[in-house]
Image (cartoon, rainbow, N blue to C red; front, side):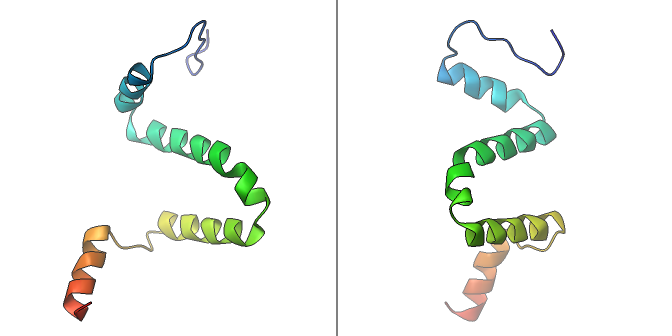
Length: 82
C-alpha cells in the first residue's frame, strides 16, 4: 500500500478519527481542511459564483499575509471604542 493511502475495511470510530487528525503535522491538517471544505461546500459554491469569488479573494489575501489575527481585531475594536 502506498504511503499516502488508507484502506479501511470497517468503520472508524469518530474519536479514533479525531486522534489521527490530531497527530497530523500542520501542512497535512491544512491539506485535509482544503479537502473537507471542497466536499462540504461544492454544491453551495457551484450555485453561487459570487460567493466563490469572495472565498477565493479571502484565500488569496490570507496566502499573501494580508490579514489580522482575531486578537488584533479585538484590540482595534477596543481602541476605537466599539
